[in-house]
Length: 258
Ligand SMILES: C[S@@+](CC[C@H](N)C(=O)[O-])C[C@H]1O[C@@H](n2cnc3c(N)ncnc32)[C@H](O)[C@@H]1O
View 1: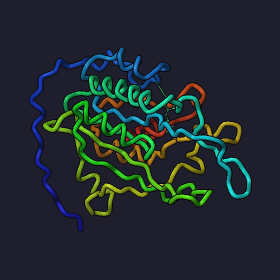
View 2: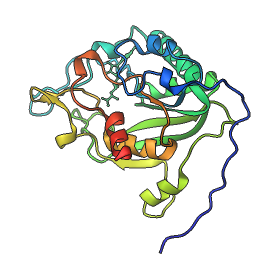
View 3: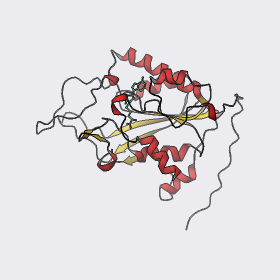
View 4: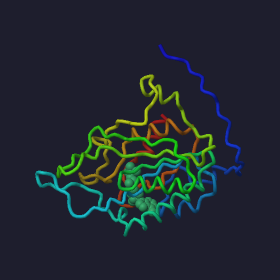
């Protein structure tokens, strides 16, 4: 038998901001441009959630091969290349500042990254005034092995969930999360497989995007932290070479709408 729980309604944040008419926003569209420029074209406080999957700045040197000699499809795209940490930090500070400006006072930011970038992104967002609510470990149930056997298998990515300020009255559907987790409080470590099978978008038989995120990850985030009618922005949706087919946030939204 289920348990009834009354979750106290939280008053909205006291900060007054002018309401933006949603009709004036480019909803349900891919803005085919640099995301910092695109965000600059949007009014203040018009978005309820930003989900960001920024470049990792992997700094890969040389090819990576499997023990059988085959090539690993690593992230070696130009969009992931930065001259140095300073250049990456500058880029991070710029997109985060715009994301912060367009977020409503009670809106939240989600950023996903790996050990290559998430600590730098985390420090920058704290410096800008964001208030970290959780870091979620996405534990990959089917990670890529460490082919060289020189390090531990890199089996997780980290997501930072942050509010605009400590006082923000952000959305969190505690009850839905508990229901999704067999009546146990949802924890901060999520075991979800990486994209594979039919979900993995392909172009001419090879991966359409090297870092496609699983729909299940986005589904959980959207279910936990948004309400019907909310406006969600994904600044790093996909570049012009990878625009075929659906993508995790939009696919997850379709599932929520169904
Ligand atoms: C880590 S991937 C995101 C993958 C995506 N979440 C998915 O599941 O398919 C980062 C993406 O951001 C894009 N990107 C990088 N810099 C950008 C920028 N300044 N403006 C817009 N998109 C950018 C890249 O082209 C790349 O497709």
